[in-house]
Image (cartoon, helix red, strand yellow):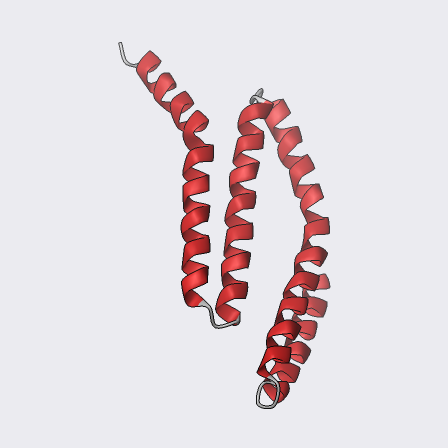
Length: 128
């Protein structure tokens, strides 16, 4: 179970951060960023399995790859935005985190335009 290892690593680094923060707060932030990067890279390797499953399901359901790719990009933007914002919050920069979240929301809206247009087009065709 990789999640147990990730949680264990998180606990160890958290304890180190609590100990180091008193004397060297800048080192504690760097340690937190390093842990965040390690966890991100560990989880990123698992994403490929999910992407392949989505592609297979979309192909079976006869869904255009363009729409699937758009949805996957939106999901990616949401996860990366949340990750980046949390890293900023961990570093004590709540204002920067809020700006990152705002940018992520705008990008999601822009990316969703083709899907919203398709849904509206489908609704218009269904209404006599």
